[in-house]
Length: 201
Length: 215
Image (cartoon, each protein chain N blue to C red):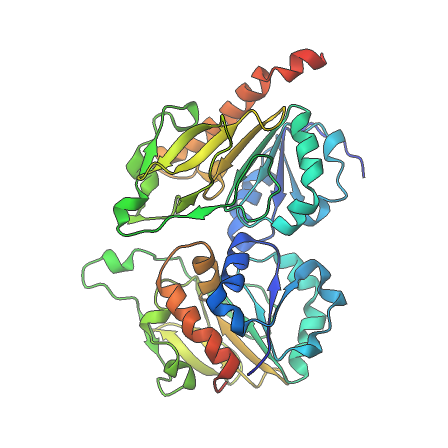
């Protein structure tokens, strides 16, 4: 089982999501962001960068995060952040449509681009379906897992741009679960965290 | 660091991307000083002559807990704290941790607008629903301190928003949702909240009894 650490900046949604008892077995440690420089990341296999975190403080620690990644480990970045922390994702903003399911012939637009991937033994497309805040057009060779029809990827794995593994998504499940909003995000985390801990990445 | 400023509002910037709009609004408002949350510990809050401390849902509550005494001293100078979010650390005098509401039906999210100047003319449906979807505004509450005035409730009477004038010599407004000052861009009655809240804060500040003692 991989040891997963999470960047933590004291926000209520991060606290709720990553101290939730059912997710506890998968979270080895919350790493308090302002103190990150004094923490040895070598003790961990996976580092999660949550959405809605103090962006500038993350930027200040990018060298340390990239050193972790380049030592062959896994970095997971979640949610609505267009920062250039990880090279080549080529994020494009998309306006959030959170009401798509109320429209006639409702369609989220999400499709599984690699349904045979191990992640989908843990979650279904429905579990990843609420809304998204942007799309990626990655410039490296990546495994795109979830895409928007006739548009970019919203979740992919990149094993080529660094010596480690990047899992990037424009989905923000921990923000919504931690804010008590949007039930699909709980089903997503129910599968996603066990996959990060035990699945084939 | 000692800064004297004329800005009445001090807005703490939590640095999250979803706070960027309120930070932009604050930066373009001459009555607001935006301060990064991680500069707050070294900031001379008690000497800076702000009247209103504005803190939103993404704030680092571990940091706020470390700064608890400074915030209480600011309130005891006869100032006002507005916190919008879900409390999980005890850094606001008199306040209790957020209690999420169990939702069975979208009607459970219906907001009851009580008679208060901040919400004058605000229609319940304009804050309960966004493009027909309920739940954005509030999904739980903070149990109120004794003597607090409740100004919004959920369908089951849970107090979403309260004003506490007793726990300190200042005034504390706690709202279990997103920053109330950001409700100014909506093209319905929800857009009244931001400006009406600002007006209320000035009236509340002027009416506070401590100031007559101080002068």
